[in-house]
Image (cartoon, rainbow, N blue to C red; front, side):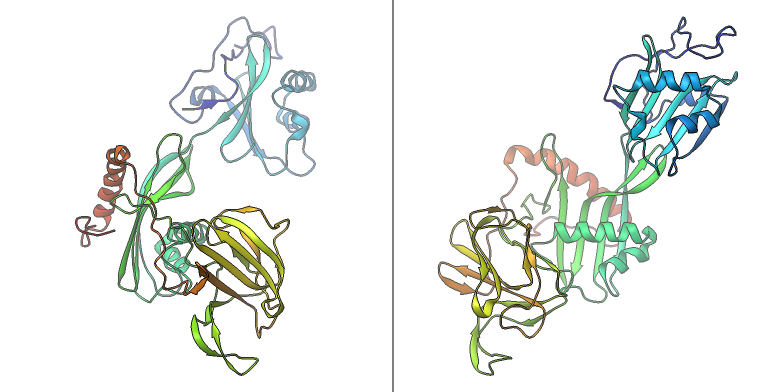
Length: 420
């Protein structure tokens, strides 16, 4: 149903032979509340429709005038609807439709402000006015199965969902499994990806993918599962099939890297000094300028240059952890000591400041004063769903599982004893 931002009945004029301008409102015809995402009764009643896209230099006036609307009526419309719709702010690239009666009188003007936002101009009981409506997406779940031969994006694109859809879903999966899977390092040939995703339609036209509803990934012989849970008034979140949050205290890695040049070690031959020294962190190789993200929520304890470490950010997290980000080319704008930082927030950008042979991020994690291996330490798991939410979660989960099973007949999703 249309969500009216400016509510109230709108009366549409019936044609009068003595009133060619079409502004006689003696017989009101209210716009109904319709179950469809567009007032089909108005469109169906029009004898002529002029549609197009505003080009650079086009105006509300010249587009309507070229369609056959008299200049006097155009001026009247622009003035009447200005409180709700300033026609001077129409932008090029936006679509429009102009509807006329069999006697060539203007019935309705439609302006597509954005993908979902539409402005309708029609005559109400008190004169011409504009309303803005939000066209709701119609959602249809879709099962997608992909086999990895190279990249995750390539595997998804090979399922015929298109390049844009593949990129969209790959990025969403990277966010959902950010605490467990590093898609730039963990993927292997013949890994499997099985998804139930939202397909979004506007007025019967497919416009793209929405949320991942259910994911089952077999990566390096390990199965990872995620279920979307949506409840009124709360943000979308992802859980294992038994209701354990996928979100962890720390991200798996702070940067989208191409390789790891050095791991955590108590004795490593330094590539520049040529002496054995401890290497209490992970070196993530990435192109210069790649964003570096905070691995966990916390407070900035240091921002500056530290000798061989180069540009260095230190974050103190709740509990006993502190994280360090070294060799940055530059810092993110306006970060300073004392700032609160959210998990995933950009701190700076990959570089090679200090004592470094190439562009990389040196990432360290300190627990109670001792450096620990970020790739091996067992970090706190996410909180489970509250008991009172489990029935609603199970209802949503089982709906997506049934779709997955229909598409994945030979590999049913097993929940019992999954331990996840």
